[in-house]
Length: 298
Image (tube, rainbow, N blue to C red; front, side, top):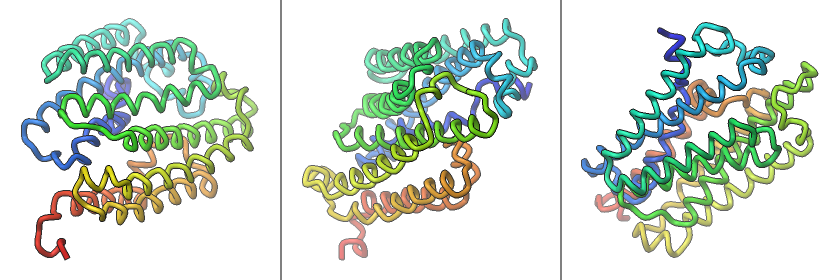
C-alpha cells in the first residue's frame, strides 16, 4: 500500500496550499464558508496533480531508472504495475472533477483546473524537454493555483500577488534545475533532456537575478498605495524581513550545501525555512487580522 500512496506523491500536495493565499491576504481566511470551498478546491487540485505525476512517471520510467533518487519511484522500481497506475490515474481525474463541480463558481474553477491539467499534460508529453519553457510552465502552475483560490473564495487578487507567485515559483524551479545540473556534472549523464539548454553559469545568474527581483517585488507590494488602501494598513512591509531571510536561506542551501533538489523536501526538512515561514505567516496574521486590537494600533 505504501507504494501506491507514494505514487500519488502526497508530499508535493503542499504546493496546492497556494489556493489559500488570496483569501489569507484579503483578510477573510477564517470565514467558515470560504474555508470549506477552499478545502474542496485544494483536494481537487491534489487529485489532478497526482494524476499528472502518474502520467509523468509512466512516460519517464526508463529515464527515471538512471536517476539515483527517481529510480526508487513506484513505477520505475516496478513496485506498482503500469495497468494499476493507469486505473488510479483515471479515478483521480474523476474524483477531482467531482470535487471541482461541487465547489462554488464550479465552471470557472473547472476551467482553470482544465488549463492546469492540459498544460501539465503537454509538459509531460514533451515541453519539459525544452529549456526555459519547462520552468515557465512549472511557474504558471502556481499562478493558476492562486487564481483558482481567488475564484472559489470570491476575493480579488492584485497584480503584485500574481507577479510574486510567478517569481517565487521561477526562483524555486531554477534552483531545482541547478541541482540537476550539478548531478549531470558529477555523473556525466543528462537526467533531463532540457539540461542541454542550461549550464551552471546561466543558472547561477538566473538564480541571483530572480532572488533580487522577488525581494524587490515583495517590498513594492507591501508599500504600494493600492495595497495599503485595500488592506487598510501600512505595516505590511514589516513582513519583508522574513521573506529576505527565507530567500537568503534558500540560496545558502543551494550554493553552500548544494541540496536544492526539491522545494517541498526543503520545506519539510529545513528547520530554518520552517521557522521563517511560520514567523512570516504570524506577521501577516498580526498585521491583517489583529490590527483592530488596541495594542497594535499604536
